[in-house]
Amino acid sequence: GSAVVGGGAGRPEREPNATRPARQPNVTLTNEALKSSTQRRKYVDDVSGEVVCEWDQSYEDVNVWVTLPASAKASDVALVLRPSFLSLSILNMTVLEGKLSKPVRSPPESFWLLEEREVHLVLVKAKAGAVWTS
Image (cartoon, rainbow, N blue to C red; front, top):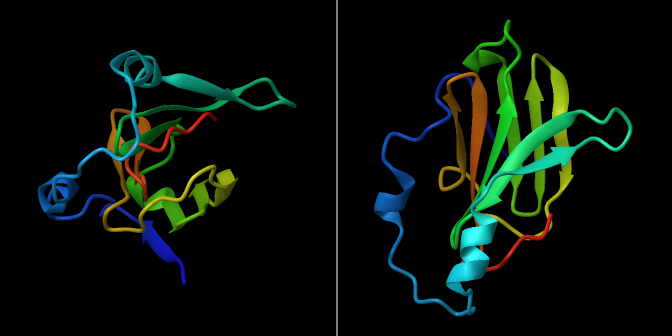
């Protein structure tokens, strides 16, 4: 089944990092590779040329930021997240949808929150250290 996270309660009550056990790296990720992957990258729509979102990654997480339209509130955001699929809608319009390049953990480990005028998705990698290329 799928998990739906929406409304103003995008963030779980406790910090997700607090419940994660320490993991031993099973994939070698050099400091240089990790440094270059933690800079925000833009995802641009091939047809419109507009920036759909920005994203980056750490050893354990992939972060995605989507600009929230001026009229939207937290209750207008809906996320359907499965280990290999994501659908994000704002104001009943699909903003991002599709198969993920690597599997992620389902909510509540993966979650969303509002930061300034952005929806911030925190997707916890199912296999820490797996590097996403796009």
